[in-house]
Amino acid sequence: LVVALAAPVIAPYDPDAIDILNMLSPPSAAHWFGTDQVGRDVFSRVLFASRVDLLLCVAGVLPPLVIGTTIGLLSGYFGGLGDTVFMRIYDLTVAFPFFVLVLAIVGVLGPGLLNFIMALTLVGWVSYARLVRAQVLTIRESEYIQAARCLGYPPAAILAHHVLPNAIGPVIAYAVSDAVLVMLAGASFGFLGMGAQPPLAEWGVMIADGQAFVQQAWWICLFPGLAAISLGLGFALLGDGLGQLQRRGVTA
Image (cartoon, rainbow, N blue to C red; front, top):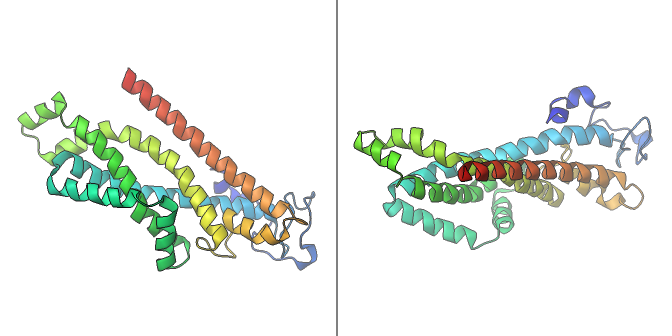
C-alpha cells in the first residue's frame, strides 16, 4: 500500500516512456527490473501497476460488500417472499463457477476495467448476502433483539444498531480474503485481454505482454508475477488473521 501511494516518488522513470534504444535490456543498475519489448522500465511499471491492482481490489470488493450486506440483512431479518427469492438467486448463481459467470458477463459487456468491476459486483454480492443472512438468522432470535422489539424500536434502528454490528465481523474477514480472489481475477482477465487494456500498467497485462519474450527476457513476466503473488499472500494472511481474531472473540 505504501509503495502504491508513493509510486510517483519512488519510480525512476515514466511507466509509459518508450525507449527503443533500450528494448529488452536485462536488470541492471539503470533499470532494476530491466525493460520490456518497447524499452519501458519494468520496475516503474510494476510500481504503478500496484495502484491499479489495489484499486481493483477495493472496487471489486466494496460494491458487492455493500449490496450483499444490505440484501442479507433484509432477507435474514424479515424473511418471507424476499428471502425465498434471494435463496433461489443464490442457488442459481452458485450452480456455475465464479470465473465462468464473470467471464460471460465481461464477454457481453466488453473488455475493460469498469465492465470487469460491474461483472464482479453482479456475481459477488450473492456470497456476502448469504453470509450476512446466516448471521442475522441467529442474531434475530437473541434476547437483546427481542427486548428491543418489546421496547418499540423500529426495524431500521434494530438493524442498524443491534443486528449489523454483531453480524459484520465475519463479513469483513471474508471481504479481506475475497480481495485475493478479486486481485487474481483482475490479473487473469488482464492476461486474457478482458480486463485492463494496454498501455495501462497492470500486472496481468504486463505478464501477457512479456509472454512472447519469456525465453530471452524472463524479467518482463517474473517481476509482475512476484508482485501479484506477494499482494495475494498479504491479503490471504490478513484475512486469516482477522478470521482467527473473530473466532477467538466468539469463543470468549
